[in-house]
Image (tube, rainbow, N blue to C red):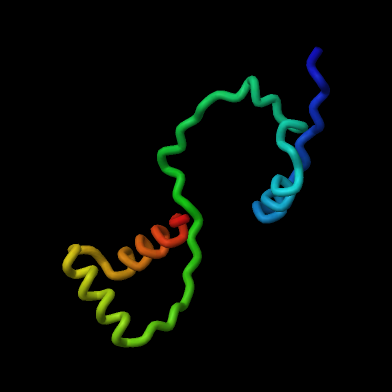
Length: 88
């Protein structure tokens, strides 16, 4: 016997939807047994610009390291931050 699923509410925006799913069990709203894999090749992650103040000497050392790797220093900073954030 399959159980009755709750109707998915309408959301005014993505932030409201995100808050909802952070506090609710999706299995009460979706039948995951019927789910199928999907590919989203053009999906780009959300980004947000930030302002970051660094000592000039540190920024120069980062630029030198990025130059040695033949990459923009901003990309190197993002890679290093991601690596540190993922470290256990």
